Length: 319
Image 1 (cartoon, rainbow, N blue to C red):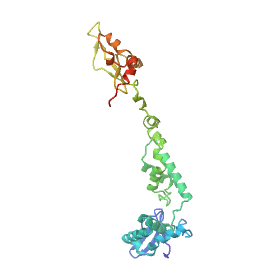
Image 2 (cartoon, rainbow, N blue to C red; image 1 turned 45 degrees about the vertical axis):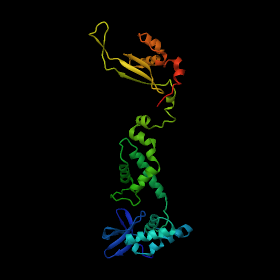
Image 3 (cartoon, rainbow, N blue to C red; image 1 turned 120 degrees about the vertical axis):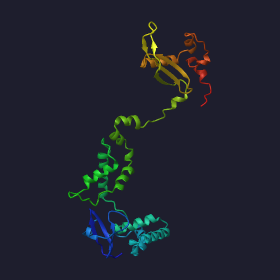
């Protein structure tokens, strides 16, 4: 394509003029590979010299020669710029011929039209842009104000890429680049994100990693889960039935392997004293305990005492 190069600028972005007609012009954005578009009013654009970033690439490697050969049919056909259907049809035919994808052919075609290169140039500017994105994420998104990711992107543009007259710099990262950097560098998994936005307490309670298995103790008899509740009943004094002394607390110790209620405590305490009393009752002989209250049971009916533990652990557990 031996057309004279012409570039225009609007709102900080530079465009290459591909085709000029009496009705308007076909332009392509020089900041990245994207389809050409038609602009009827070119007077809104400012004509600028060839940008330094637009440099014709020297085709001197086998890979570059192969890429240029693939898109050459599209470059030779001027109608591919203005006719979308023809462009996609030719790209599909070339892709089938070279055993690649239509998307790749179009991406190479757009890049060559927009930048004069067949490969994406990675410069120090890209590194600087990544640093700006990283700083904006940690400054605005990782903060107690809990801004959205989009708001953090807009704050970055306002602080780093807007000129004194309100114009946007041509090298400003796009929203897609900002979002891709955030997820591509796994910043959404960074613990600092939760700590900064939600607080250290919430991170330690709900999000910190827990190594090993917390359910290994469930398989052996002798491990208890305990719970307590305040009984829905009021007790009265033995000396004076008109005096209400309060509502008792009920503690239960349940064997995790068998779901056997091994220990019970009923009393007015609701602290560690009640917990220790319930554990002591779980390890006591239930035959002797019930006999003190005039209740006769057999050992098999209360097998949570330590001398029955071996026998009880041999009982098959149905789950």
